[in-house]
Amino acid sequence: MPAFVTLSGRSVRLEPLSLAVVDDLVTAASEDRSTYTFTRVPAGREEMTSYVEAALAEQAKGRAMPFAIRWLHTDRIVGATRLLHLEYWQGPLPWPPGAGGVVGEVPSVADIGYTWLAASAQGTSVNRESKYLMLSLAFETWQVHRITLKADVRNVRSRAAIEALGAHLDGVRRADSRGADDTVRDTAYYSILDTEWPQVRERMHARLGLVEAA
Image (cartoon, rainbow, N blue to C red):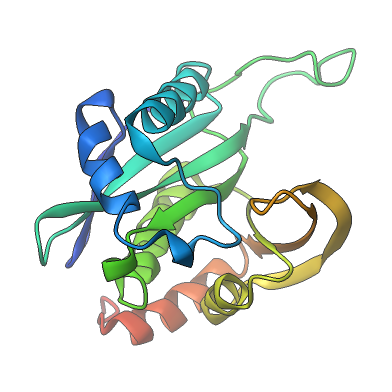
């Protein structure tokens, strides 16, 4: 499984998620919960502790890499995100399908998800730079073939942010899951392929005000 890392940018640092930041996450999630209509965000210390413990259990299996998001501008934890659904395509094909465990040190494909931010960090560059740091790790260090991103089809704001990255809309899966508002949710699925990453990276560099190395 991949070694855990801290990812540092100009305004954001993605730190390994741990129980030590539960109280910080509770504070972040309590700012204005009306912004979480389509996103399930733990409320209170008990829910947040369970949320972190579940993420760490997935990490221990090699299936996820969860982060706490620190906004360097304020030196506060302002949310969480993770690389998840890590799949490993190295080694012989398992039989029966799905029976294989973690094979290899880095995943072959992954999702980015479980992202939420405090109300004060929404609409800033925090989400964009967080995505950039994770995409860079996935494509440039792990050399994955694909990153998948998803959003409730009704979540116009999240979908716009994903599309602004340059991600491709693969389609909408109807009745995909239970929604955060306790309805049956349709989910928009997006992807970025390794062959598309250079163009996406250039686009993100421009939006983040970064300069490509010569």
